[in-house]
Image (cartoon, rainbow, N blue to C red):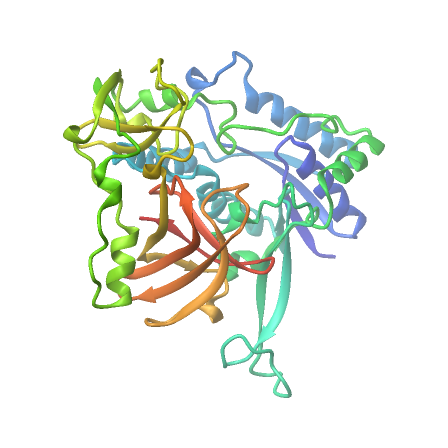
Length: 408
C-alpha cells in the first residue's frame, strides 16, 4: 500500500484531499506545517495558526488518520520572509505563495514526508498532474522503443476554471511533480464543499484563507515595517499626455534589440510630474497599487506606475487606462527561466507561441516567447497592465503550464 503525506492546512481543500486519498486506498498521514511564530504582525488578536492546526487535527481524527505538526518556521523565515524583505527593499514585489510551494511545501516539507517513508506528498491545490512519455527528440511521444522513453510529468490546470491554482506551482520541477498528488484537481470548489458537508468536517464552511501562505492574516505594510524603516518621500503624478509617452520608436537592427527596448521600463524623474502628496517609503509600494496613497482631489483614482527606491519617489497616473501602466514585453533573466517541461525548453534563437499570465487569476493572454542569450522575452499580443518586477510570469500550452520565470 502506497503511503501519502497530506499537508493538512486546516482548510476545506486539504481536508477533502485527505479523504479522497483514503477512499482511493492509500495509507494517509496528515501533517500540519507551522510556519510562523511572530504574533505581533497578525491583523487580529486571534492566533490563526493555532486555530488552523486544531481544525486540521479534528479533520484527521474524523478521517481516522495519524496526525502531527511540524515546525518549519525557521526555514520559512530564512527562505521566504528574509527573501521578501530583501526584494521589497530593492523595490521589487515578490510572490510568497509561489516561493512557499517551491521552497517549503514541495521541498522542506516533502523531504520530511519522504523521511516518514511516504511515496507521495499531496496538497489541496486545484490543479492536475498528467504523465506522458517523451523520447529523445523534443516533445514527441515514444513509438516502438519503450526503453528510451522516460515518464514526463505535466502540470495541468484544475477543472474548476474559477479556482485553477496551477500558477502557484509554476516553479515546481519534474522531481517534485513526480512525488506530488493533487486529489481535488478534478473537482470544483462547490463539489469539494459538498463532500466536506456530507462528511460533517469542521472545515466544511470555513472561509478560504487569504494572506501570506501559512503566515495567516498579516497586514503587509506593518509586516514590512518590522525591518524596513519608514522614510518620507514624495508622490508625483504624471499626466497621461506627457511627451514621454509619445516618443518615436528608434530603428532597430535586430529583433533582440527591439525586445530589449520594449521590455525596458520608462525611468521617470521629478521634472516629469507634479507633487501630489507624501508617502512613508517607496519600498512599501508596488506597481498598479491604488490603495494606501491617501491622495484625494483627483478626477480618477491614482495608480502607481513606477517606484524608485533609490530616490524614494513614487510616480502615479490617473485611471486604469493611464499609458504608464501598460507594457507589451517583459524580460526574464537567463538564470530565472524555469521549464517544468524540460523537453520543451527553448534554445537561443528559438520562439514559441504560448498563452501566459503575469499574476494569479488573470485570464491567459496570447504571447510569444523569444529565447536569446540575454534572456527570455515574453511578448504579449495585447499590452499588459502593471507588469511588476519580482512577480512570476507563467506560460501554458492549452491547459498545461510548461514554464515560468521571475519578471526582471
